[in-house]
Image (cartoon, rainbow, N blue to C red; front, side):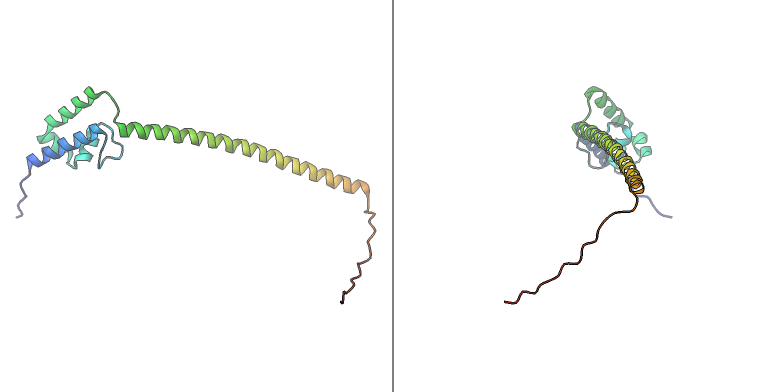
Length: 144
């Protein structure tokens, strides 16, 4: 029979409080999104949901109250949202430029095909080519 290690409730509380502070300040260490949710609080603290809700529900409620009182997006989340909006605009501009280039390319392909047909028709109308071949050029050697 193995014995379980006793839990450090004070350490868990400290971890949860520090995670809440980091999220509210917008400087998370373990959260990818930095959103102010209980799920992100759990990810940031590294504690299991059953542990937190079983013994530290008061800290979860305190975090939720602080989020409601803050009524703003953390700075890091806001900067990520701004960067995302800029990248989406850049992507839309690039897609529009690509569509325009594709239209131009399609028009040029049609033009080349039409000119090719015209050239072929002109060659057929004119009959055999009347080109006189010139004699090859004589090379003179220069000896000095």
